[in-house]
Length: 277
Image (tube, rainbow, N blue to C red):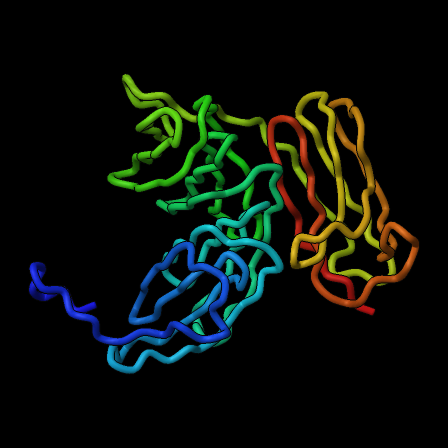
């Protein structure tokens, strides 16, 4: 739309009404004359809008599940999905490449990024804060339970403004701010694997700062479960499990990128693994 005259907006062009876009659009971000559209069924669609009269689709990136929102900062796109946060390298918009995927136990309805943190509207899980200082290893850094359903976010001067479907407006900061609710910090488990890349087996190591009930599972790049290495209580300290590159039925999986997902009541994180046959 041409909005040079706010009182008489004029339609210019678009990409719509085709079989490729049967799913409904959920969000859009525009960076350097490239539009990033998320679709509930189709994932991410990248469109060159350098010529507004003739937008050109560059790429469709299928996620295998619903995508509710997108934030683009520099060369990275952050996708808020139904069960996790996906980070893509979009330095070449026609060829988005996955940097990491953090599977989560709650839906992400919106995401905004400021400095080293992704602020997440987490539906019934309220507000969550994810440390993305290392895009290859995003880690949950904190949370705040609003008692409602976090729906949308906006960032201004380091503060996150959360629209809650059931309880109005909340304002958050990753650090202590007088008079404002603040995110509760998590003690961080340490997840590592060696060798990595590996063939045929790798050892996944976990150091827990305190006892917890934990689940350690392996997922493919679409977030689908491959196998489970552990589920149950663990004491604090060092733990290790071997993964031999097989799924839950004992079948060898293909070469490629996988993620070891750790989930505890306090945090969720994922570690990138590379299997080379």
